[in-house]
Image 1 (cartoon, helix red, strand yellow):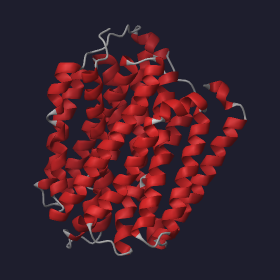
Image 2 (cartoon, helix red, strand yellow):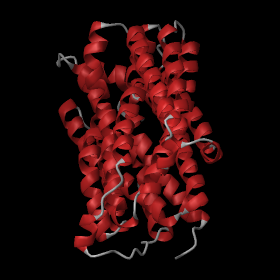
Image 3 (cartoon, one colour):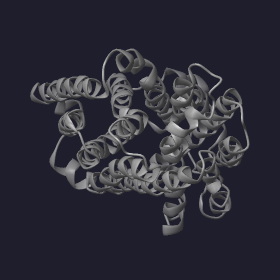
Image 4 (cartoon, helix red, strand yellow):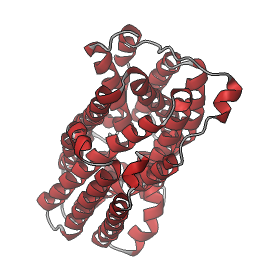
Length: 387
């Protein structure tokens, strides 16, 4: 097997960064974007939906992408996905109809569903053992750093006009030549089709899939609800809104970089418990906030908690899944991951309409505290043996 060169690692990290920007890049422009469609009565909801609409189609696409990846390989599908990403993502700059924008966001989601499934599968293919554990943490950290840059740039461009953040999606174009030059198709000794069909992932996978969906439903309150929350308390600059959201990804990067050392000391269950308690504290702070600084503090703590849980999920799935069905299982993980992001504003819409932003974040904090206690109980009950 070829050596995992620095160029190969950088290429994988750059492709990974596209996942983050696919959703949250346009977050700072949501308030102005909602004002651009005065003729539509539910414009604010549709604009929030435009943020998370790709996630629905990522969720729909990923299982099929996983099956195709297992059967036909990784790289050809990746090249098509990256080109589609650039075309569909940047289309929002040129369109004036919210429904057309939603349609292109759907195509963007299909491309991300393919590319994310492939990149996580390639990490499992290329790396093993301690090297994989370290790289998974680095990957999530790099995604967070990319999120900082893309969200920050999105905030700056949103102050020029709500359309301009859509141009950031063209970033995928210069990555395509790097995938040609530095990535390779892994050689996997596939079993016969009937043997592969008989292979089943362990039952713990279903806990991980359900948990990752709940995790993103709650965490996505930050990019979806915070822009409107900050406007409500008097923050007018979109660049500041982008900064507040970017801070969550910055602190996510810090904890992700430390994931390998954290995993050497704690079990998978314990890390989830720690991440959820940090998110609960973050949401409690945001709920009490009356100023920009306090909200930003909450997003930082929340990002730190989330940053340890994302690589924890990926690493656990990679560890317990056999290579022959790896694409299928990672496709399932991608589905639950992004379905959680998509349904977050939909599930929370009745709460946001009936209660204040502060009360909504208090509700989120209570649920997060419950999840932290639940995972701690699972750890105490001897769940470490399942790892």
